[in-house]
Amino acid sequence: MEEKIIDESKQGESLVLEGKSSNTRKLYIESYGCQMNFSDSEIVASILNDQGYNTTQVLEEADLVLVNTCSIRDKAEQTVRKRLEKYNAVKKINPKMKVGVLGCMAERLKSKFLEEEKIVDMVVGPDAYKDLPNLLQEVEEGRDAVNVILSKDETYGDISPVRLGGNGVTAFVSITRGCDNMCTFCVVPFTRGRERSRDPQSIIEEVNDLAKKGYKEITLLGQNVDSYLWYGGGLKKDFKNATEIQKATATNFAQLLEMVATAQPKMRIRFSTSNPQDMTEDVLYTMAKFENICNYIHLPVQSGSTRILKEMNRQHTREEYLQLIDKIREIIPDCAISQDMISGFPTETEEDHQDTLSLMEYVKYDFGFMFMYSERPGTMAARKLEDDIPEEIKKRRLAEIIDLQQTHSGYRTKQFIGKTVEILIEKESKKSDAEWSGRTPQNTVAVFPKEHYKVGDFVMVRIDDCTSTTLLGKAIGYSEN
Image (cartoon, rainbow, N blue to C red; front, side):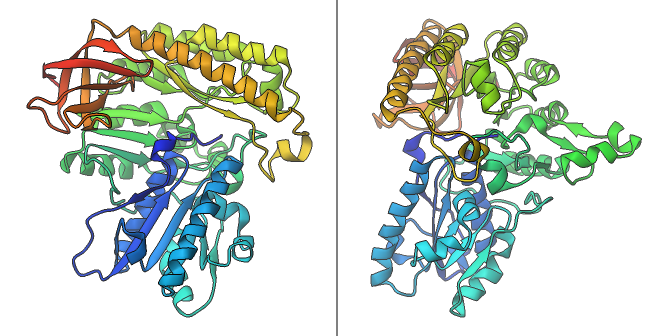
């Protein structure tokens, strides 16, 4: 399944943590792409913290610079290459500085990266982060270092991630890695490998530790969280050969959700990303059962045309997707839903495009992540389908999708006016240092005057107005949460 790209305002953030006072070396790390990459960077920082590195936000003082990369679109890769040019300029001033490339782009290009980008000393795939100490030793001895071997069982469940550049309130908790859904446009199965799930006990321990440290909200992460299945480890396909006892004691995603919600009833629980074919009713009923599980589902569809969905190798039709939407509305009436949408997939006709627009009209998503089709080397679409939609048509269709989504986002936010909603304060508003910013359980951003409240508070906010994406209101007291 494709990786969800987060808001570009969060792209390329340099991340910093409080390290060990005895550490003398400096690590500068930037992350691009999906939430999983940001979570992985926290694992990397934890590993290197034990190797004598504290992180820094000052590129020029770094001994080691790492960029955690995304390959889902060509634009993401070009952004990374431009950053490497910046690193190169700094390295000319500080020649002892070492540069490494992590993540999906490293996995896709492998040793080729060392040939294309002479500045790069180290290339490390998403499953090889535990080998970083050995790879750094290779680099220190003057050799290029590469490890991009995909694992069948690595989940990093035994590593306690540091929390990089966060607000001390919200955190990511990885529960699965890899993906088995071979969508024809997507590189994730090739860059992150087969799907495997993490031991639920290690997940609960991480969540409990976050609660002790004062965190108020966690997001369970995976390329496809609904496929979570733990019966003792290994690839999901091995479940077919598991014993009856193993099957009877297996933990699926709905059960994991309940375990987490029960373990920390005062903590908000979110999850991402879901795949339509794998989301089951028991997940929806679990969400409805527990108040601390947020009523929000990111449910990528990619196209409203069944024909195009088949070309994409999506394992659902338009009709099946809409049936799932109806079921969500039935079980969780106030659930917010967001989408991923691709315009201009090979062979897409105007009729197919209109199917997408009509599906959007039916669902009226709260918000979405919308992109033009970008051919990715190695995918089935690149091998079998001609990228035959002209750029100007792709752009026009994308603009129509975005315009319609803005209309629907405005419609959804207006539904909050006059209501009082619970907001978890996460940070200061970008536009005013006199206002706080936080989110509703439905993931809608709200801003309101600071008054005497602080980051990490759950407050009840009366919504008086809104923009197309942001709620505007006034806090009327603390939540009873």
